[in-house]
Image (cartoon, rainbow, N blue to C red; front, side, top):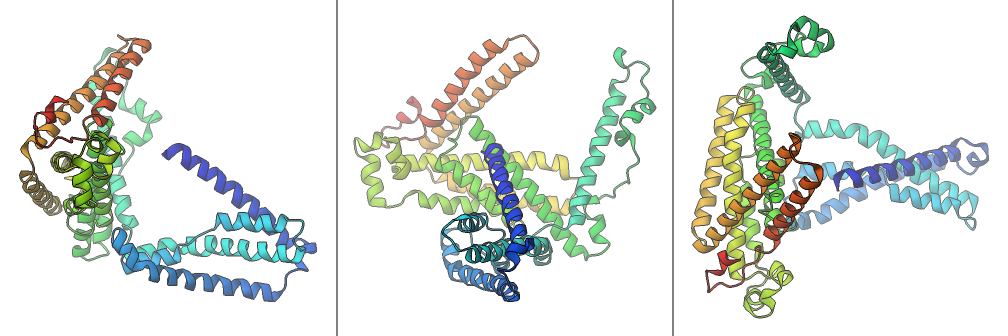
Length: 443
């Protein structure tokens, strides 16, 4: 999805803009076409450029309430960026090329079409795109470049130290005999190259010299929250890959969306559980229809009906997944993220985010305590089964890595494990019998 379609989009955009640029240049520079244009056309192009920004601002302003009702709230800063960043216009360029290339179209009309539409695309690329980073920085919607550079240097130095430590530990091996750091440095100068030392809080050195400490502390919190939530998101995706959660299930979408929402609000305390809890209320679209279709034969046995109008029992199972996966992800993040960033981020910032995560987990545990205990047990059994399947997959890959299992045998085993993951991800996702608790575990 990411690699193939992004490549197709890139190639398509490149062809469109390259072709449009050649044609637009021909219209502007060739003597045969210059006669079709006048100074008034240039003035109208500038008027169109200004008018389009006014129209775009009006549309954003009118739709602003609907944005806030249907998704995450939009701030005035984000609305301003949406107004300014309406760039390019590949579809418009294609239509302009078609109009200009139509034989029935008068040459003057086709030339003016392509001149104005291509001119708007050129101005938005050269003006809007160039000034967009400055606008984002001034609005505080991006992290300072100095901070990004500091963090990059910290991890670069850590990589260098790791390589040096590995060399010191392995240099006594027979095949490394006679190899000296000076000899390796010739081939890998960056590993032993001089690198400026960092202070106890290296991520804030460049900022603290120019900005107030309070601002630097705020940026540190933002950086750490972003790293924390990315780790949480990674755990959710691991659960999806292990077959614990269906890739296209509502639970997966809620958990990943909550992380994305938290990343956008990284300047504020962690509140991803609030988003998870809020989205969990949307599982029941209409109580009457849910009760009828979710618990009435034969509708209760149809997965597609349960996915839209889940029964009360299925909702309990889904909510148990939300809470248990959330708790597991936050526990993992509190354990692993400090291993990488505790020497980069100020200790008080690390402690602040840790407390925020603990509070979030506490709320999730309280939410979990209100659910049916049999549903919780069902989810726990399934999570354990998914983890065991993932361990088996890793073990098969280890057999192949060490050469004790050929590709054919590994392919057969991995195919069977993948089949089991699909069964685990789909077959047990909907639970329709709320009266007989045995069905939670019998499937």
